[in-house]
Image (cartoon, rainbow, N blue to C red; front, side, top):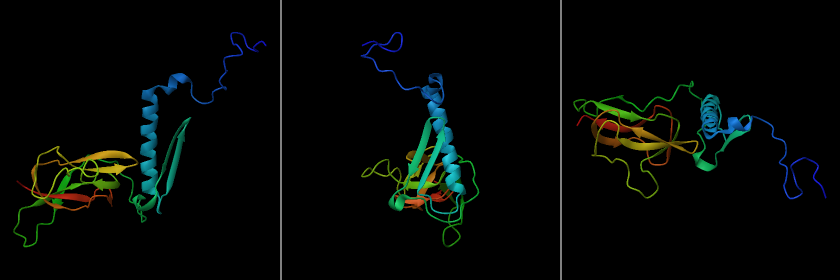
Length: 183
């Protein structure tokens, strides 16, 4: 038996013709850039929708990003806030403690919509606890969004006086997570 194409043999399979971008565009850096763009678009799309989102699918050429939520970790329904870029976590002022004469408090806020976790993994010690001293840049928790773990860091030094979000709790963009007072 002879092969129909020059240079091929009956023992080699000819791959089906490719559609989409050429192989040069399939470099790891290019794929990472496309996926990063798709993630940004998915976040923006979910933020703009007014109802509960169960599934998002985005495509760019042959690269597809598909996310599906199951059970209680699905994004909460409700009016969507106007889309804003996700800034670095920041501490902001909070109302003074009851009594009014306490030190000024600040908060570490969520940089993104997602699920807040106090520890790096289930069963591990939390990043911080009430009474701990934190320094600028120290990780105080993580927010999981679309299977990506985003570190939440303090932008100033202080003592943790209250954990404002529970472990595994869904959080919104800019939601206070940890209350700090000057150390």
